[in-house]
Amino acid sequence: MHPESYSPAREVEAVFVVRVFVVARKVAVQTEAHHDLHLVVDNYAAHKHPKVKAWLKRHPRFHIHFTPTSSSWLNLVEHWFRELTNKRIRRSVFRNLDELVNAITNFIDAHNEDPQRFIWTAPVQRILDKIEQARKNLDKIQSA
Image 1 (cartoon, rainbow, N blue to C red):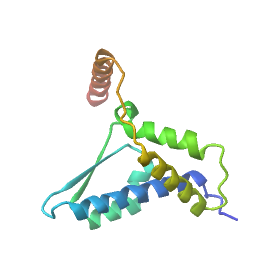
Image 2 (cartoon, helix red, strand yellow):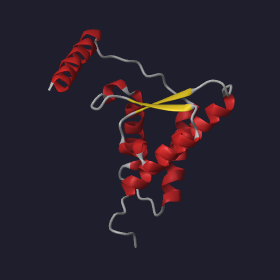
Image 3 (cartoon, rainbow, N blue to C red):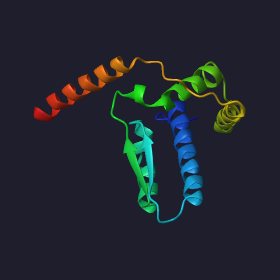
Image 4 (cartoon, helix red, strand yellow):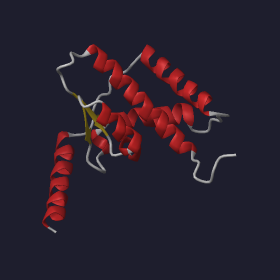
């Protein structure tokens, strides 16, 4: 039995965060040591977890940058995670964390066999209008 604070969603968050840092380490090995590495992530709470902060402190060449709150339209990763959720995780049953990790890994492997380029279809003016509205909202917050 799991403690009251147990949440399968937290386990999924942890898996994704671990996966990000596994990839980050691979990039670090392939990048000359004198180069800093910048990670751009969304504002998901898992990315601000104390263990993540501790890892970053131990690896000073990594710098983390967060996309603005409520700007997932900027983050194409959100599209990919929606695909993962809809096509593999939702309505599935996993008896343990290993089964979940294997399902995610298998999905990634299958996806990478035939990756498809994401083609942005939003009209430029709509994007620019959203940026302008975000600036106005930020100005209101900063001047308050």
